[in-house]
Length: 178
Image (cartoon, rainbow, N blue to C red; front, side, top):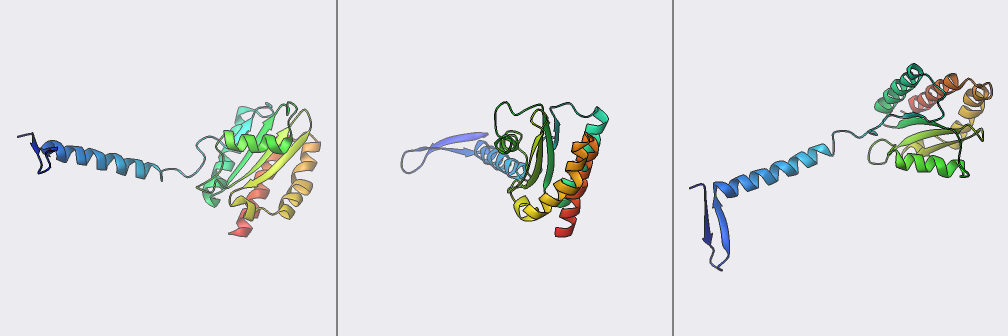
């Protein structure tokens, strides 16, 4: 028989035979699949570079994405950058936090990241660590990075070079911590 129905001692109907075995097998397979799926990727699903202000060529964006992806994989911490045309009346820090949440940035369960957001209209920026990034990037290291490495290039409108320097400096800080 493929399956049988019978009443147990309390009068409840019980599935038996092959159908019950298949039901258990399917349930266990689904559970194992979902469990394994939770470990497949701990990195952010999307890219770590968003050029909404259209400052870069496609080739430049790809170079920045490749470098940021490599850093994230090597150090278990996203190093992301976002350019936007303007803040639309908002605050730069709140806007950066909003993008971090909306884009699902951050590596692993702690969602570790360093995010640099640049607003062109206001010529303002925010650089914020998240998750384990709070411990990896100190205020002092971020201030030094921005003052000596990134801001001088931004002042000269050398956006690609500034963001490459940002990624290099972040990687250097991460290398010192590991």
